[in-house]
Image 1: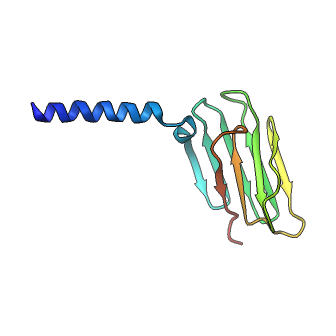
Image 2 (image 1 turned 90 degrees about the vertical axis):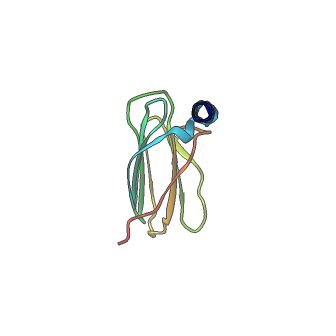
Image 3 (image 1 turned 60 degrees about the horizontal axis):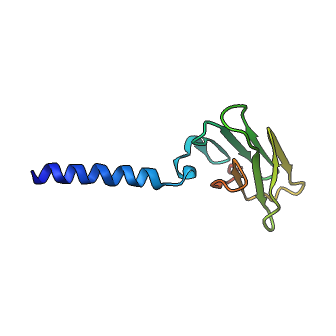
Length: 118
């Protein structure tokens, strides 16, 4: 009887945690390596960010929910957010990009990408 009570309580606790977890925390990273990230939001939209020290390209693939791809890069300091319904490309003429952020909406979870070692 005690084992069954613990199992039921564990199942209820797990269901509660899943129900109260923000949607952004349920995003699934599909591919990740230094310089590149691809993930899907819980609504089914797929996003990617490709980053080098001279170029950042964020893409929202035509799937899932409406919204834009949002990209922000860091060189000497953080730049402004840039967004578009399908893609954003930012260039650094002096090769100073050392990290970037990508997200799928204005208030979605941000993912950090670091450039490939060259």
